[in-house]
Length: 189
Image (tube, rainbow, N blue to C red; front, side, top):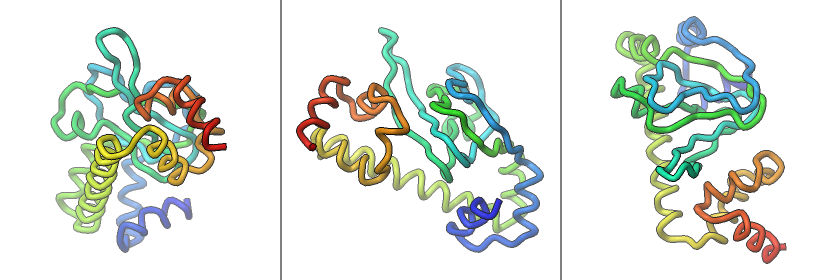
């Protein structure tokens, strides 16, 4: 719990009374690997704070090929924000890659609290800022870097990613084939 408090506090000071409110709308869960948290076409209601393990979000093309959009590791929030905000069916699947401990947070209760508690409202704003910054960074990487540079940047951000996530998921995230990733890794050694 201390690490959760430290993580949330890194986004601004949060009084203990506010932490208690957040705890009331959250449930600590252990989820097996390969479980879809948010399913394609279903309207989600939960946001997840990853405590341990890894989650991916992906889309599936018309041909059935999966394309990883993002990975989530300890002390990051995961969830279909667009679907949550618009109360619409999810277009992205969120799936555990390993056994995960996570806090499952009722998003709509969170939003109710944000209307009455400035600390929660400010936390929400800062978290949305982080999502925007992360997405913009990812878009810039995709248009300005080659696959080798994107892989090196990913390794900088998550040094042990090769041990955490299967290579074909990393390749998909980088928008390359597993064979291309293997060549890049060989070249960098």
